Every structure is written in C-alpha cells, then in structure tokens.
Length: 452
Image 1 (cartoon, one colour):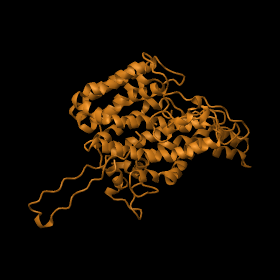
Image 2 (cartoon, rainbow, N blue to C red):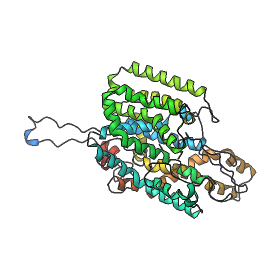
Image 3 (cartoon, helix red, strand yellow):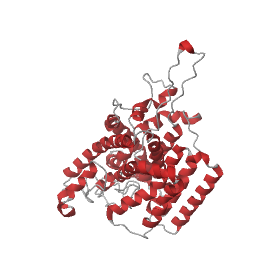
Image 4 (cartoon, helix red, strand yellow):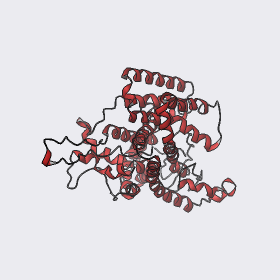
C-alpha cells in the first residue's frame, strides 16, 4: 500500500505522494549484495535398445538414473517462497521454509553427482552455465544505473570501476549507488540496491563450486568433521566472536552458514544419509533446529524471527530442516497424485531457475509503478482507492508472476545458450501439440544434464 515498506525493502507510492526512501536491507536478507543458482535435477531415464535377435540370452539394459522430481519440487517451492518473502516481508517464512539452505543442499547434491567426472571439466561447465544469464542481467542493470547518472569512478577513491568485474565474474561484491533515480520518478531511490541484491548468491555458489572437489574429498575421508566444520566456523564469525570486516567477512559468513547444507547435499548423493537410521537423523536434526530457535530467541533483530539476520540460527535450523527433507526423500521419477497437475510449472521453474532468481526483485519493484497507474483511472473513487491500498501487496504478488513469465520468454533462453543447447521460449516439458508423456517431464533438461 502507499507509504508502507514491503519485504523487498522499497516503498510503493500513489501518484499523489512522493516516494519514501527505503530502509536499507539487513545483510542476511536473501537478496543482499543470491545465494545455488538452482539447476535441473538430472538426466532423463533412457534404456539402451535391446538386441532383438538374442532376446532370450540378453539381459535388459540398465536404466540411466532419472530426474528426481522430489528435488525439483523442493527447488520450485524454494523459489516461490523467496518471491513471497520479498513481497510480503513475513519474517516467519524463514522458519517455515529456509529456502536458501534447501537450494544450496540441492546444488551440493548435483555437484557431487557430477564429480564422478573430472573435476576441472565439471567446474568449467558450472561456471559456463552461470555466467551468460548473469551477463544479460548485468547489461540491463548497469545500463539503467549509468543512464541514471551513476559514475563508478567517484567511488572507492576513484577505483570504483574495478568493482564492475563482479558483474562479469561474481567473485566479490558488485558496486552500486545507494541512492539513484528521482523521488517522483518511476524508480524508487534504492532500486539499484534491491536489483543487485541477488548477486550475493552467485558469489557464494561460485565459491562452493570451486571448493567442491576438496569438500567431497574431505567428506569421503572425515565425513562428520567436514559436515560440522562450517557450523563451527559460523559460531566464530557469525556471532561476533571474531569479526572480519567488509565484504570479505560477508563472503566468509555466507560460506560458513550454508556450507553444511551444501555438504549435506553431497552426503545425500553419496548415499550416506540412507545408511543412518531415520530416527537418528530426525532426532539429531530436531536438536539442531531446537538449538537454532533457542539461539534466535535471544538474538532477535528489528524484524523479529527473521533467521536471515541471525547467522548461527540460520545455519543450524537450515541444516536440521534439510536433513529431514533429504532423509524422507522419495526420489520420484514422476510427480504423484494431485502434484502431477503442477508438473509443467515445476519443470519450467527448474529450467529457468537462474532467470527467476536473478530478475525477481527487479520485477517486484516494477509492479509498483504499474499498480500506481490504477489510482489515476477515472472510475477510482475513494472507496476503490482505499480497497487497492489495503490489498496493494496482494496485487503485487498477483502481478509479479506474469512479469516473471515475460522475463522467461524475453531472456530465459540465455540459460539454454549457456548449456549449449537450442534456445527455448517456454521449456515446461510439454511435447509439441500439447501432449505430454512420461518422459516429457524431463525433456527440457536433457541438454542441461549433459552440459553440467
């Protein structure tokens, strides 16, 4: 509603009122300067053709491992939860479903699966698939900043231009102007901060990818020590016991908070979780989550139970939550029951996860000037204006999805080029003619799986 701050940190306004300066986001918001750029789950199931001349003596060819639709479902839920959080700003969502921990765990599992191949080739493939979508996003955002009058040479003692490399390769924090735009213009004053927010995830993901061969090697030799080491590091750098200044400290804290989730995903892929009795996993996970809530209760910030602001609580709660999700993992090849009706949307969101995550914050902000135009309609009397004001965030939620759909069509195909496959406008797995077979749910990811 006009004059009210929403979860993404900006303030929508009616045309009659000036824009209100946004309250700067806390460091642990999920779009601070994304944490896996999400990927497709796996390759399609396929059988080698049998020899019809020797059917009696030839054993059936083994089936290749198929796409895990349970993991696809978790990733889709995580993406939706992030969008909902940044519209409504409900702190309790970070407890109900810790999206970033889930996404990092899924990425760790995929990375461990891929590391059956030479490590350098896997890392190179991951980086290749990450960068082109980033470049498309960076080209638009930087152009908007420069048009708005931003001059990086005036930052950091004239060295601000050097930071622009992070819009090309996300190894550090990308620079951006804290205030840019017009008070009464289309863009809110802190739009650049909001738009650049998701790039923290790319940085964390990139460093996890680079470190994965070493992490997997260590896990196979000392699994418990490797799994718990990030929690110990979080207890040191995420509680103020040891403070590392600047973006170096932020990067180390990001790595520590979600490191155990990444390694737990590797443990899932290695089959280690299945060897541990379910009651033991659930019991230990519950203790971790209870500790996380206890710690959070004594370190509540201005947003209350927002675990994004409490690193140690985020780390322990996310690890326990993800452990239970993966322990109960049913490994669906197809979505069961009523979930099947969501099959195409889940396939689409997994095939365009990078695009959705990179652009969603900017698209949320774009809903504000669009909704504000409704106040200018001739039939908008006081009662209708009040009704729109009361339901403003709900309409933001409704409007952002068609905008995301347009962005998928407009730039989502860059993900296909990055994966070295033919570009597709709407990769929801549907076959031509509108039909969809059993293998259709993964048809949109065959090239992606090969190019990992």
